[in-house]
Length: 63
Image 1 (cartoon, rainbow, N blue to C red):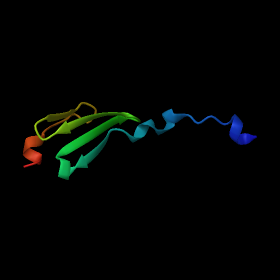
Image 2: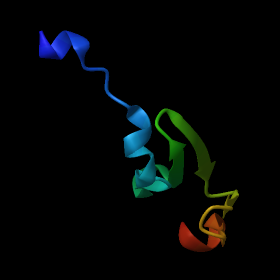
Image 3: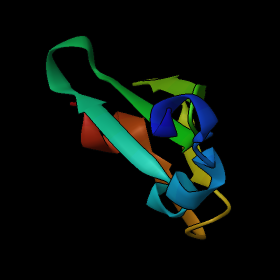
Image 4: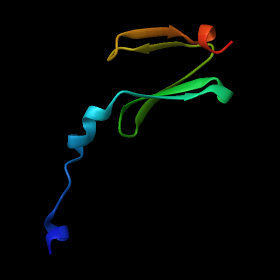
């Protein structure tokens, strides 16, 4: 009975962003800005994360 009435509020978990997933072997980084929303960057790109106010030339990271 309780489980059928309960509807989770996913916005509660929205404080866990941004999240960077770094894949060194693939020379790429995925930046998740919300559940299911992401941008991918590879070694030729300039990663810009406006939420963290960070800019990184990935060519300097993945040599």
